[in-house]
Length: 221
Length: 46
Image (cartoon, rainbow over the protein chains, first blue to last red):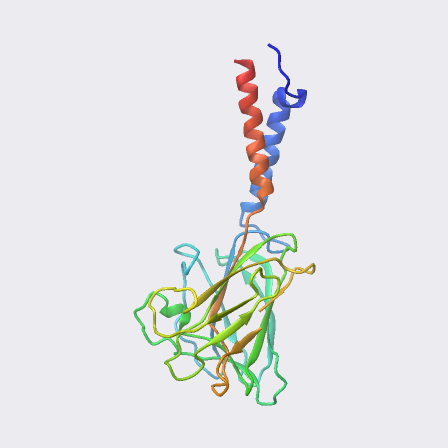
């Protein structure tokens, strides 16, 4: 039989080697092994309480993405007087495998009374699907509120999806929050919680960003 | 950066986040290429 295919493709060894390489590549990207940098999988993080504010309920499982049984990193905030915290290592959603990523929280305002605190109880609809996640918030108490957190240990050659969550806040304080994310295709977004939705609604209690880290493997929110 | 939109409430909020690494297309492309090679080999020898 005549053929115009290259010899390498006509050889069973060539195809088998190609398939083996593909399987190895898939294993490298899909297995929940410890990663030098965050190359695959999902990291979930919830801010819960601090030394001055007892933690509210903790969350588990899926939010906008994820699966039942996912384990969330739960960071207890620093004391009210603290202005920075971290870097803190983050695990994958299996709850034990280091993702390679870390988070550092900082206050961007030099006002002396500035500090970071978890604010429990801002989501009051306790039976809603989003209650356990949104019941606690990371808060910057300053006259001109600005805070940030940096995520490091990412792969500068990869793309990431970031979902930021924010709570309805009793309608009394902190109604709207604007987020600026470095490396995002659409870097700025606003959450205006107007009611206790009970479900996840984009713009009301979460935002999604698609982003690429800088050449050091970092992003900043 | 996280900024409050209200000038007097003095709070900026975030409850948490999810960060997902988007799988590289390279691994899937290699798998497809390997499968194509096996398919062509099978068709050629049939």
